[in-house]
Length: 225
Length: 251
Ligand SMILES: Nc1ncnc2c1ncn2[C@@H]1O[C@H](COP(=O)(O)OP(=O)(O)O)[C@@H](O)[C@H]1O
Ligand SMILES: [Mg+2]
Image (cartoon, rainbow over all chains, first blue to last red; front, side, top):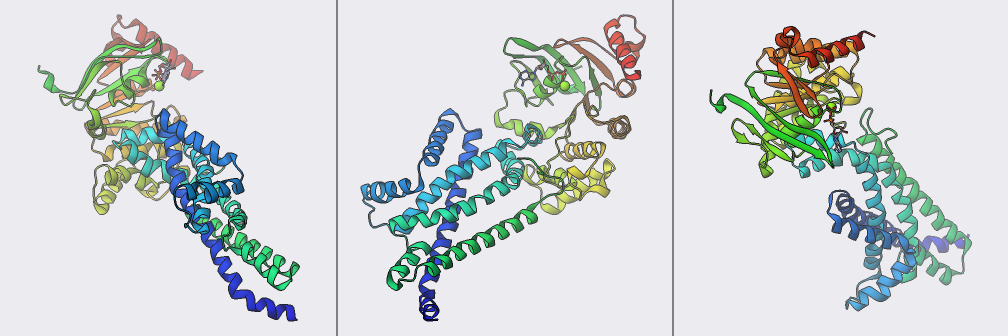
């Protein structure tokens, strides 16, 4: 019973870790979305230069292990830009976000390309500019088609956040490990945070499923990808 | 007989894909309220011709004028001309994520920048015109092909076009549904809409067209009124084609 009392004392400390983990996930997904969607559009509608720059970007960020990217940015790129004082949390968001953008861009690209040519043709025939057609016809359809695939990014990024332990982000695993070192309680602590990850995963997937249901359209997008 | 009498002028349109010449100089003029029907074997360039008129396909040579304004080489003003030149496609191309009424109003809102209430009213009015007002809130996947095509006609009509291009509007439909779409088109013709129609529906061509243009290998090879095509012995190729088509349809 001592163990429980000790653990209870640490709950506020762990809770801050939970917030950091959640913050990392949401910020990284957001950065991934903000960069990934324009990248997908660039890869489809852009000129040759834009297309090849994006391909190299995607190839780079998908080709390296997360931990290599973290070290590269934390110990290499940020210090060399005289930004050593940038907190590890920010570096982690940048790395997970830019990496997520590479993955997300390919999800959006596939979704946009699955929209039949006729949708653009019809939109243009009504006098829409290409931008209007993309904005009002192509994207509303593509985003719905992309949503199930995009949802898989959530557990991926969530599990990736634990690796940010390596650069000292004060997220769940970092704090749990510190707790273990302080209390010599191992198994219960790691089991507890494993449970937290599972719960976060479950809650996130539930929320995304609800979003899918809310945005679904009768007869649209079934088996499109 | 000044050129200003014509609502649409198409002059010497050429188009090649690689070294394959698809259109070899097609010209014709259209007066307000006329229906011109294009017939001919497939692969002859009929779709390409329609797409060259609203510049969905850029012709290599030749010019198009709408009300004496040049549509070809018009830069971004093409988006204005396209509002004035409606188009209806074989496969409807309704926007799959929008209900029928929103399909009709989306361009009113985003292109014509109408306010929401006015756009809705106009969209419902056009749906009524094609007999689809009861289906306003249904999505394309919930409509039959004939219904979807009528909605797509309403969508084109909503822009108040000077002319509508129909590219085989009934070719994806079975006979029952074909009839309901042709009925709508006949009504439009009667109401004075200017239409260019590519179709294999000879009955429609012969009863509605002011002029039938028979195309083959990228050229208009014979053209005339339905009566001429049927009765004038000079129109051998058209008659031959129509005859074949009738035999084929009756098989
Ligand atoms: N985008 C394109 N690229 C290459 N060839 C094309 C393209 N569009 C049409 N064609 C070719 O042009 C010819 C005429 O096509 P089309 O205008 O669709 O004929 P029709 O409508 O009379 O059946 C066909 O041989 C077709 O294969
Ligand atoms: Mg065709």
